[in-house]
Length: 381
Ligand SMILES: [Zn+2]
Image 1 (cartoon, rainbow, N blue to C red):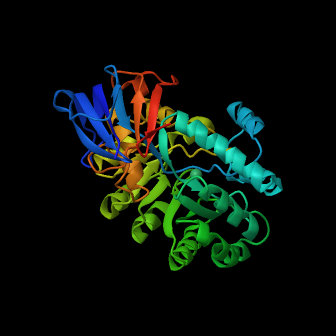
Image 2: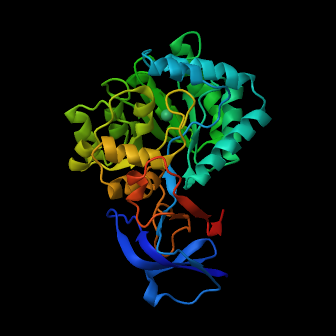
Image 3: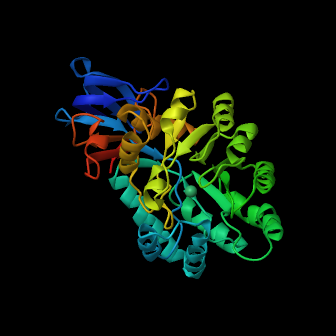
């Protein structure tokens, strides 16, 4: 199998299970789709091809464990209004639902392709994609079928908001015919557990139905208000619960005790002018923290993980190394993967060459396109 040596790496950020870890003056060998060797450049084995990193940093590709890419329409005017004083509310989702239902499969697919390409250019190599803007049996199933063309990590989010009619009847639809149509295209099931969306009892019923259909649970919780969503995620032993902006001490303790990962989405707080989640409090309590984009047309239309890293460092008390670890290794763990988000022999060769001498530049140089090269499954893209 063909081998590629990437050498003269100024700083290799390996993102180990135990935490951030770096090797200076490093090299890395790719064999086929996996990493075959990692170590000091002076001791590197020969390979078929060689890439000179020129003293730059190499990091794992970002693992974006939370995005909503299947949609149509634009809500730029809503964003502009919010920036001049109109508060964010969950109901704006309905605007996107109407546009998504009206779009053809081809329009949805080409829109997702454009956003996935945008993410790749910014160093993201693993992407989770949710449905949630169809909210009918047909439109949720086709949203997931579109998403599946781009990733295995697809999530059924029929319980994004009640689109119309009686909430109880809608939960019956989500847990019945909609789940039946969605499950073949999805690995995960998710619920927006929030005032104005779905309460804890409804979320529990939906996650239970999903589990019975073979889907693994995740949850949007405690984004806009305090509530029981995070504790529900911990009680059910979910791999991750996302947002975690409004947390009581008992929520933090529940996350620590359950091992459920808190996935923080600071692009949302940036784009809605809400207070940022307190990553430092969570890390100091022993909670595992992931970072993801939550790319969506309403509350956060950025696909940039580097922006999220910069916000986490500037606003949430994370070190640059903690933030990068959260956007790689822990992001992968939030999707129950240990084969990506880490640079070690035997792992998938998903990695990024930065036009910078160290990972710190991801936060030190916010807004600057630092991704010089990306390998996905050992192939340069
Ligand atoms: Zn979301």
